[in-house]
Length: 310
Ligand SMILES: Nc1ncnc2c1ncn2[C@@H]1O[C@H](COP(=O)(O)OP(=O)(O)OP(=O)(O)O)[C@@H](O)[C@H]1O
Ligand SMILES: [Mg+2]
Ligand SMILES: [Zn+2]
Image 1: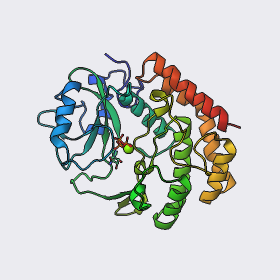
Image 2: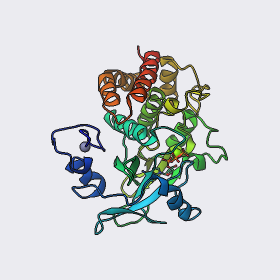
Image 3: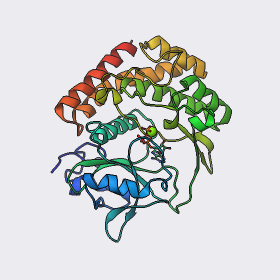
Image 4: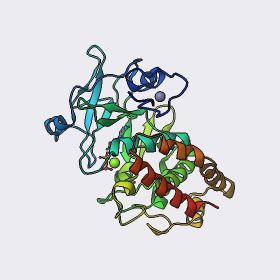
């Protein structure tokens, strides 16, 4: 049995982890003290996903399933529509993607980025899948309006964009643009230091909530792609200060200026990122990645921190 919680990845105060979860972490993600079971294994995923092709509304390149929590059966069930969760299974193509994504989301949250509840869940064959709660669904099942930045920028290519253009849309449409611009700046920093080379336009959205109006949605799809694709051409797939490679601290400071953030704000985000280094390193070391991948992850993170640190 694991000695770390499959959601928050720490042993924490409750030393007991029934079915791998702190009871409070399970309650947060599932509404129940124990996590539900997934009634199929990795080899069944392709079949489960195939049944849903063309019927399920979640896009994206990797196979994934829309699921609800059947409390009576104490399991997660695949559904065509109205799912409250997205399950991203392990794939043969990229090693340990679920463990990688859960770690990145834990790190993002520790840095103060808003993220949906998430965790790892064992499939029947004991391999771990990544599960995330949908932020565009209310408890009563109603759906919040969500537009990703490929739609907002009206382009056919999800890689045809820049952080500056995302910021311009935020300035125009967000009801809390000041907060969102700081958040976008911090996400750019984080994507860079975490080796997330696939943060394209569809991985950012605006969402409309009743009492706030339009604002940047919680973060999703943060993975260290560099770790599984060492030959990835670009460090960032959306440009920043006109480039996608060889970034320095100055590029990020200029980016913040373009966003309209003052010097104190950008210094604060950069300083916090620097101060939290030992915490991130502990999280990487204590993650569910195997030792080789943990070392690779640390290496990418430290190199990039070295380039933007003061
Ligand atoms: N927690 C969430 N709540 C609501 N919608 C989400 C959530 N996570 C992802 N989505 C939506 O589902 C889409 C696919 O999810 P995600 O980006 O994680 O999958 P992916 O297959 O890894 O994507 P990619 O094509 O970028 O590799 C996203 O573009 C987003 O619109
Ligand atoms: Mg995506
Ligand atoms: Zn936990």
